[in-house]
Image (tube, rainbow, N blue to C red):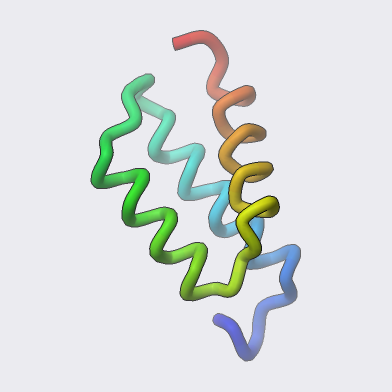
Length: 63
C-alpha cells in the first residue's frame, strides 16, 4: 500500500477503519490500538490520523 497508494488514499483507508470502529457506537481500546498501529505503518502523520478519526466520529453521529 505504501508503494502504490497516495497519501490521500492512505488517509482514506484510516478514516474508513475509524468509520467501522464507530459503527457500533462503542470504541474499543483494541480498535483504537489497531488503527493507530496501521496508520503508523502507512506513514499517516498524527494530525492526519486525528483528522480522520474526528471526521469518522462526526459522521457516526451522537453515541
